[in-house]
Amino acid sequence: MKKSIFGLLLVAEGLVMLVATLVALYYHYTHGEEDWKALAIGTALTLGCGLTAWRCFHGKHRNRRMLSRGDSFIIVALAWVIFSFFGMVPYLLYNVEGLSITDAYFETMSGFTTFGGSMLSRPEDLPHGLLLWRALTQGLGGLGIIVISMAIIPAGEMKNTNIFMAEASVVSMDRLRPKIGATARRLLAVYLLFVITCFALYWAGPMGCFDAICYAMATVSTGGFGTHAAGLGYFQSAYLEWVAIIFMLCSSINFATFYYLSARNYHHVFKNEELVTFILTYVGFVALFCLMFALGANNVEISADHVGGQPVRASLFHVASILSTCSHTGQFHNYAAWGTSFWLATIAMKFIGGCTYSTSGGLKIARVIVFARMLINQFIQHLHPRAVLDIRFNGHVLSRNVVRAAVTFLFLHLGLIVLGIFLFSLMNISLTDSIDLTVSSLSDVGPNINFKALPLLAKWITIFYMLAGRLEFFTLLFLFMPRAWKQ
Image (tube, helix red, strand yellow):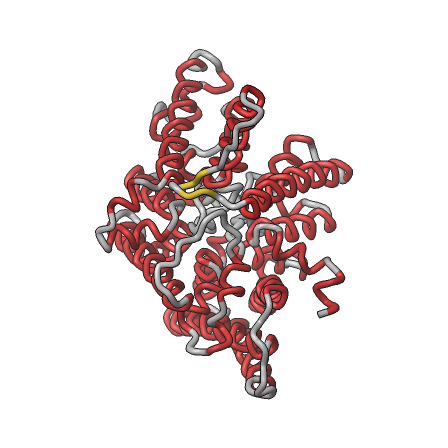
């Protein structure tokens, strides 16, 4: 059963790659580009392996048991690994910038996990087919490979709650529909609506149709891959940055919120503590950045020249880009040049991230709320030792299992950060770069680092960290438990 599911997922990836192949063929006949062969071979290989696996194992065991939660963890974790393996094939066959196998795998995994860090120095030199495939990896990874597959694949194997929950470890999850497949379809509908609307608004501005498609997927998936090394800053357009701010923020909000808005369930929306806290967090960081720019107006290191005399615009865009974990680069984006205080505030935003069941990464606002209330309860407990205190979220009392999982997540997150900083420092990577690289890869928000210059081991650690962060640790780390394989 598990092998047939891998087959279905590979078929889905092959069909998406086929779209990029057809676009490459169009540009071959109109512009003479030659990447269609690499994409065609990659498509044939992916579809062939997927169909073979599905036909060989589908229905082989009629008395199949339901997938256990352990099975689901294995399927989800390996799906991302396998997707990236097949996804890197076009890069290798076309010999993009002389990428090694490690570099090509890094680039592909970065797309699927929406990390956004790139091995390419000049993506604008890529042919259109490969640029589209690069954008599509983010499109698939944004909402989640499994969630998208569950929404579109009409197969009983995919309609499994354990698989759905294994890809999205959250504090609280509201089902939009009784059946998990219907819930996935509604989340996918919101996601596609955002992509289409963002594309239309980008195209209405100083951006061509092809660029608008790629940047729309990069924005809504909060991945950040662009068709130019300078990102959105290449276009020198305030309009495009305002559009990006809106959609980066929307993509950082729980997608179920927009479903409730469409159903006119306003009570559910306005009583959403995570949404209110996220908005307050965004406003707070924007105010902090504006204040730091104002206080440092006479400081050469953080003078207004670094933001073109537009500190408010730079603050609004930068905070939206980092807090959403999109890592888009705007016209004024070099926060490292603004000063140490800006760098520290940026690291804090990367650590926090957006809301649960959004496309953003990070610790997530819901967990921050839980930790804050645990801290407050601890103070109250010291004053009133016999008090029985519950932790509430959106009006509901959280069970001990949920609270324990949140605390475990925090300790894992902090432990992996300390370990990552230590390991990168051993490789002669500077302390600031080690901190930035570790926090960024776990939160899936690309830092301003030359990834190609990293040591080989550092690249593979970063790959592991970006996947661990995307799957929120538990699913990936389950693979390293002997008990998982004994079953």
